[in-house]
Image (cartoon, rainbow, N blue to C red; front, top):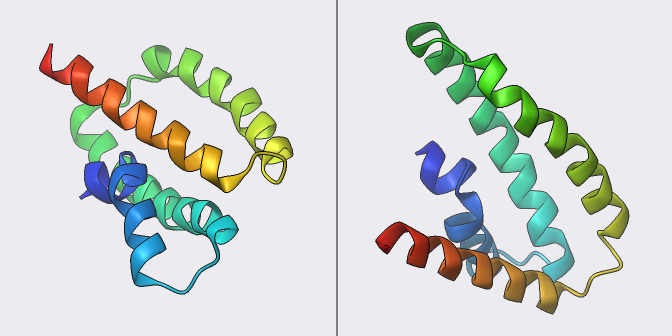
Length: 101
């Protein structure tokens, strides 16, 4: 479920929130993050003890996500929603092509 609604939540959750709720387009992305974050935290807490948390492997990505998150927060209202949807679509297509090849 984490892959569908959390870590990969943009692929399912954003279109679902867009079509199934009366949220404004500008509210869909923050709403999806508010749903994704707790799911990821619960998944981490449940899976880390069994599989071991490879913090040394994850650390570079965690450190990179901090400035990325800050930048996204500052640019949030400056990028039109239409471009966010297009960017998400391009990333989904790119990921699908990479997965198939």
